[in-house]
Length: 355
Image (cartoon, rainbow, N blue to C red; front, side, top):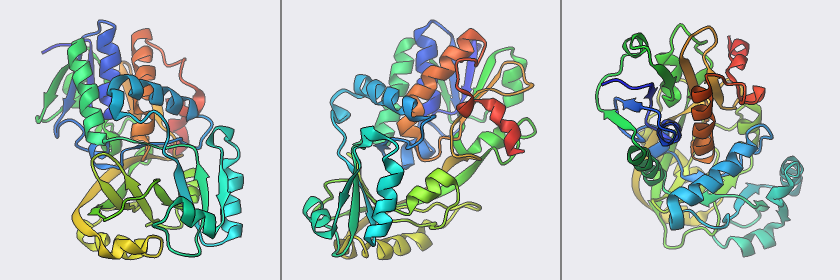
């Protein structure tokens, strides 16, 4: 089977790129030894959420519009609002100041009484910062829908079979790596090993008598996601999607963590914020490796020093929030034979900084 472009990775980024390429008449084949959405795209929380980063925020806004077009009624028309939680007024004011850099978020301070009125599940004494963002979707269904669109446009998929990068490159095709947390392994020796590394997430899928009105997020996660200095490796989140209600989440470097070990710890910690979690019925525990880049931004563009080789990875936990627009950018770059249209803050020239 020959094609003009070969994509390794059938997550949201790979499937979106395939769609935009095929729509323009490019012959494209997507390869994935594990199947569609087998990594973070199908196992992470399905929240399309503002990235809180000026360089990548335009991709978020574009992704929202693309998801509305692709998912129809499965994509909420308005954000449900993300509620960040803190123990005291000083901490919540720190959050407020941080997110005030993005006026579109309309950050609102909630004292403990107002926070409980906004979210009745909360424990007493918690302060809140409510942000105008958050579109819950089913990550697996969203990625599958994009893959179906790519197929309808003419893309082919080869799934469940080993993939050989060298063999694909010898064929003379353009090759794009969108293998998520495995991207640095696939490109071993061609990019620095620490350019993209797994950041392990454990979430516990639960059933509660009453679900939250908003995605709930412990405020300390802000520091970890925006500075890269993770001080809390298991911040509380309670995130609803059409597929599940998930308690989490971990931010763990290194070897794959045990869901069996971490699940009870996440639930115990969660009761500090939502007491009814103590009575939750546990459905299952999921573990996935998010593709964390060295500077917490996506890495998009051509691989330096390598002809016809492209990289789209490093989206961390923001694959659903940035994947569709990232695919559009990559398709345009591959067709043009140049990644000049990708802003330097997201481009592959940064890879030298990760060495």
